[in-house]
Length: 545
Ligand SMILES: *[C@@H]1O[C@H](CO)[C@@H](O)[C@H](O)[C@H]1NC(C)=O
Ligand SMILES: *[C@@H]1O[C@H](CO)[C@@H](O)[C@H](O)[C@H]1NC(C)=O
Ligand SMILES: *[C@@H]1O[C@H](CO)[C@@H](O)[C@H](O)[C@H]1NC(C)=O
Ligand SMILES: *[C@@H]1O[C@H](CO)[C@@H](O)[C@H](O)[C@H]1NC(C)=O
Image (cartoon, rainbow, N blue to C red; front, top):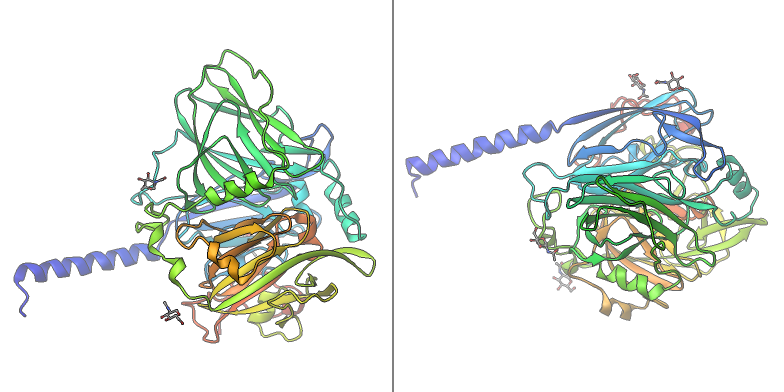
């Protein structure tokens, strides 16, 4: 068939447009951040303590970005000890070197700096950053991460009048070094002293809004262990996004935010011109900690009043039902113009099932926590660097079983091997009476099911294979299981951890080495030229051969 003149012209124009698009994509925008990390006095609960500040702020500044932006974050460590930041939920595609946990990245020595080079590739949504070493997270150093949609990608709700970061979390008045010393000494931590909202204790944080307008609140639980229930007096919340996925827009009176999780809600200021309580309180605890902030209408003529609205306290079914109601809006766009439902995760065959059981025990008379009986201990060299430079004897792939073994707890540098492009089912088993919260770096996964009791193959019959939420942190209720599906499409060394921070610190984590024998920059970037080297990687070259 002959091409007519006009269709030939059309084709050339299409090709030209494609070429332009390719060139533009190659140069995604850059954003530069200079962050100075220092100690500074803070007293969120009325007691002066040493906090970790970023550019003098506690919490740190928001990391604002748009899908595919390159973020160049130069971090100056002015503490007297090594420091690293990590990015909860930012996927670091092909680039686990920048993940900022000790298994992937050398600590920034005191007085030195390191420039993270991240790309928020193919992501939208709400996340947070946090300090990953020692027990620094108990001193601050965290902040919100916002990834907005690119201008022409449809967002399934109107532009809000304001986009507010709300970091909630439990807090200790005790210095983070003392908490760390307690853990190092083999003891558990006491119950936290209070809850903070954006670094403020009771009645101290303030959100000023205009009557009649709708705001987006990005709520992250940056705390150390407790699930928190979040609510706003007299206002309803419409859930719109969870850790990078636009959700079915369901209205909630209050929302359970498990430790490490992030949610976006829209709130319309449709009440009388006065101030209202913003409340966060602990869930599933004997003693209930509650804190409040103020939602201040700019035309308000009345201070907060009335009882602080109550929320659920011990009810697990309430929380489980809420979790099941949080679903992906299949027709809404995510980071790309095509609908989120166009990837049919429920039709893909599982290549492997991994079962992870968490446990608490003592090893050599000291409190430890484990996954499948292994309590993680760091090696002398970041695992990713050992892998990259072929340094033998740092870790062993297969040092953690893919199923619970029932063995006594033991210490090891646990690394699980997995094949690039496998599609795995992971079942988290929780035999304990606490609520667990699991996070996987480098990935988002579909939370296909959760229920009480023991998981059996029959449990698959109740999986949501249609519109489960895709996220990076999931809760596992007491004596319950949670199942996820995950497409292993990101080569690297990825931290799998509990977000229950004392447990993470005392070994409840491991690394998932997603591996391909074919070395190609299409699948994984080489080590960054400015990478810091430590341990047995000292003296190696970061310049590609
Ligand atoms: C960081 O802050 C400290 C303390 O305020 C100051 O001495 C130092 O010069 C700052 N460094 C940078 C790179 O801004
Ligand atoms: C430290 O900061 C300087 C700029 O002040 C930069 O040139 C250098 O690359 C940074 N160091 C690292 C290891 O990223
Ligand atoms: C899902 O997203 C679509 C497309 O933006 C929107 O029109 C629809 O209202 C949303 N549905 C729900 C239930 O949130
Ligand atoms: C999944 O497995 C079934 C049975 O083994 C097979 O018939 C089917 O073609 C597979 N589907 C895909 C998408 O690979």
